[in-house]
Length: 145
Image (cartoon, rainbow, N blue to C red; front, side):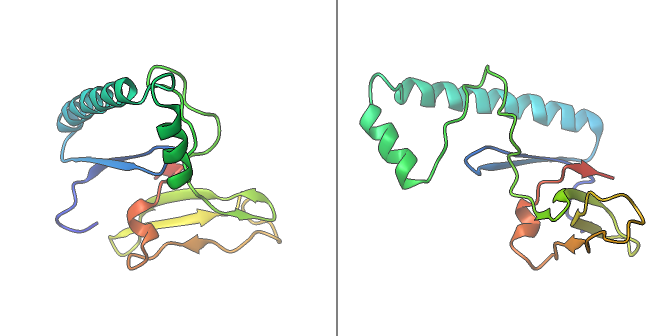
């Protein structure tokens, strides 16, 4: 972890790929930032829903979906989709688990791990995301150690 990055962070990625990262130094600060962020996000969504109601502008919505290769997501007050929102990786054994945690040298590792049982002879090699790769900044972990 770099000295400028807060020790606690939450990454949220929408189905359309927009990512929000909230960082804090303490649990109390994180609680406050999340509460503030949720209020801002809900306000923005409400404004967008008023502007782009399907009954008012079906052509504009269809154009936006096509132009941005977007998929519909449920309104803010509905349950999220059951599919995974992150890109992720797969191997012959299924969806690889995206893990993030502290590395032995004091930094952070991010990588995709085969879902096969530990020690399995046919377990696939871990795919690590390196700091200089663009995916480092958009990596969405399934689990943080």
